[in-house]
Image (cartoon, rainbow, N blue to C red):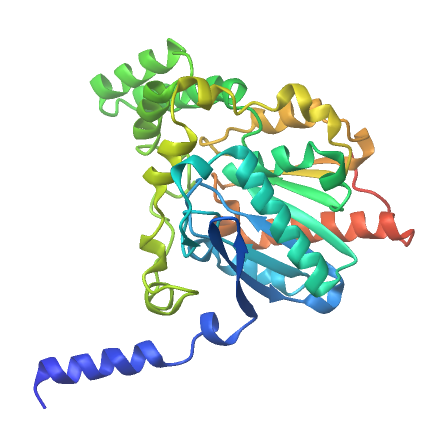
Length: 355
């Protein structure tokens, strides 16, 4: 057997071996209008509590974001992971016209209903990370939908694009000032500082320019050497499609959702958030520059939730991806919030989250 043939055989055997993607939990597709949404249900379903994870992006495949933090969470509660239309392993024939906040909300509700009807949990929580937090906020504005949910974990969510964009610029300006103080690439960082300090209005061009500049910082990860890991299992064995992580389709989804400046600015829920009255945990990384910490304070201040049921937890030495950088702290905060919210709802010991 030639070396090439032997390598091909080993690759085939490895790719057909069992992996957690193939053997753990329950995997299914939900047909929703013109899309087929992949759903992976894992964790402690016997707990009677299920957390539905709304992924960031829009366009990030959820399987790429699992790790030690989600593993710890799954020991305590059931967790539902799913890819939004046009993202990750989602299939079907979703058109660009279907990429609207309203359609994403409808898709979320279909997932919630599937979970309720199939597993009959006593409690359902939404966990929205970044864009997922935007989506969860939009979902919860409707009282009928909100009544299906016991609590919301707002994981560095962007609740209002026009309000949060100046916060992003302020964070970038401060980062540039720190680089200048170190004498690091002075000409470059002076330009970044001056651009951010000019506070350009939110629009497609300014958002894309900010996005390019912030990639040079530690806004996403406190440790700049850390990143999202792409494993063999993820590439060859995940979900409904091999190479799922390559099917992000970020530009396809984003270009449709943020089709012009007006559409981007319209993703703004700040003035409606008084309708949200359920328990909320705002969970942020101290060094997050993608959705900076002041966004958490602003979001909490707008809620109609009683003060005793609003909680703010800040994880140190973490940026935007707290569950990857500080998995134990992330899981502890989520489990603590869920346990106390469930206890308060059931009238058992523990009481509501502290304000």
